[in-house]
Image (cartoon, rainbow, N blue to C red):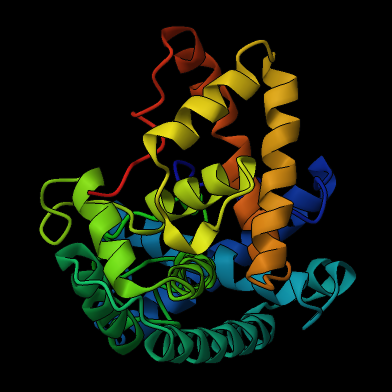
Length: 301
C-alpha cells in the first residue's frame, strides 16, 4: 500500500501538515478497501497492486473535485470519520462535469470544420466511446476512447478523466469555430499547400489557417482570402527585418487582436489566437535572416 500514489500529489488545496496526513491516510486506506470490495462484489479483498493504484487514483480525483467545487470543505474532509459520503458528494460533482462535457460535445457536432480529416473523424468517434465507457465510480481519472487528433495547443496530459476531455472539447470548439469563419474552398487549398495529404495525415487543421490569417493581418490585407502572395511575404520580411523578438511579438499581438476583432471572437477564443501568435515570434525571428518565410506563411496555388 505504501507504494501507492501519495494523496499530496492529487489535492491542490494547499499542503497537508504531517499531522493531517497521518490522520487522513488511514481513512483513505479504509475507503480504498471498501471500493475494492464493491469492485470485486465481495469476491476478494486482495487485488493486483496495479488495480489498487487505479482505484486509489480514482478516489483521490473524486474527493479532490468535491473539495474544489465546494461539495464539502477541507475541515469536513479532515474531520470525517468515514469518507464514503464525501466520495459520493465528489462523485456528484464529477457527474456534473460529465453533463457539461456532453453539452460541449454536442456543440462540437453543431460547429464542424467542414474539412475532411481521418484523425479528426476518428477522435469524434473516440469521444463517443468515452462518454459511453467512462466509469465515474471506479476509474474517474481514466480516459477511455482514443483521442488522437492534435490540437494546436495541447491539453496538459496531467489533467485526469473528464477534466481532460472537457478542456479538449473547449479547445476543439474554439478551433472549429475559427476555421468555419473561412470559406471551405480556401481552407482546403491552404491545407493542400501545408500538407500533401491533409485528409489522411495526423495534422492540426486550425494552425495553418490561423497562421496565414495572422500574416495577412500583419500586412493589413483581407484575412478571409487566406492567401499571402509572394509580394505580401516580401513586404512582411521588409517590415520585420530589423526587429528583435520582442518587437515581432508586439506586432503579432496586435495582429491577433485585429483577427479577433474581424471575426468578432471573444475570450477565450481571442486568447487562443493570441497564444498562437505568440508562438510564431521565435519561428519568424529564426527565418528572417534567410529572407524566406515560406515555411511559415503559405501562398495559395
